[in-house]
Image (cartoon, rainbow, N blue to C red; front, side, top):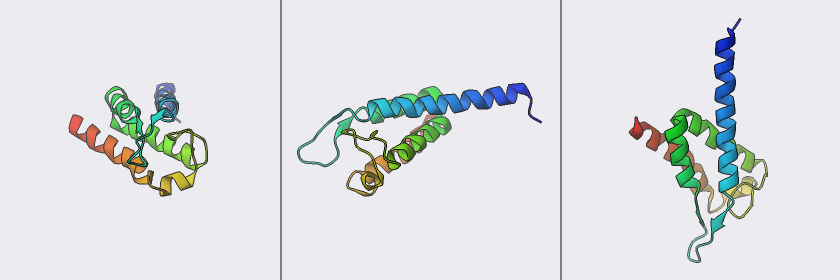
Length: 111
C-alpha cells in the first residue's frame, strides 16, 4: 500500500504533465505561415524550452507526448487549428515528432 505522500506526489506530477500539455495545446495552433515552407512559425519551441526549465525534461517530455497523442486522435491542437494522424505523417510530421528529441537533447544538455 502506498503512503499518502507518495500518491500526492504522483498526483501532482500528473497534474503538472497535464498542464504542460494544455499549455502547448493553447499556444501551438497560433501560427504564422511561411510562404516557402509547409512548416509555420509558432511559439511552441519556446514553450517547450520553458517547460523543460520549469518541470524538468522527463515531465516536459511526457507533456509533449500527451500533446502529440491528443493531436493524433484528431483534436485541433496543431498549427492552424488542425489535428489528426495525417498531420503527423505529412510534411510537418517530422517537425512535430522532433519536439520529443528537442526536449530530450535540451534537457540532457541542461543538466
